[in-house]
Image (cartoon, one colour):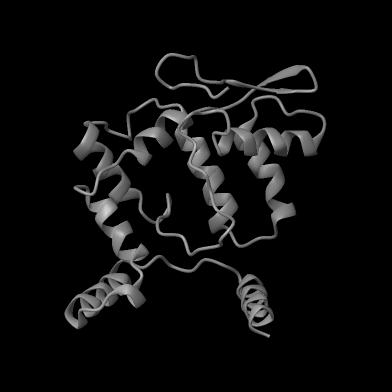
Length: 191
């Protein structure tokens, strides 16, 4: 049964093999984890020690279980607000690292929360982030990035969206090897 951010205590521990391990729940840690996962260009295996130190106050003995627990918490598997992800791979439309000022402004505009001073659990932060409305600049920018230009018929609107995609595009931080693997996988699908 999912955990409700409204009336249940949010998790501060991850249970592994019958033992409870305290974790860092502050949203800043988890934004750093996301940064390491998606914006640092080193191989995944080299990222694991840094990821685990950002997650656990006391490291579990089995690394595999520690990674599983970290992913469970990061994805908010137990929260009722968890969004179902499709298997379809898409380009990111936001980045916690590249959009920091827009995120800060959106939280302040919509909720009056100063993220530089706020003490928010990662699951609280995610619920609030998922609740941001299109009136915030962040969500407007995300809508530009996510726009499917092939579905736009009006030439002026298409040109506008192309310009916005260029203006607000995220930097591609993948390594050359990652880009080559993705290109090769795309060609395999075609042939």
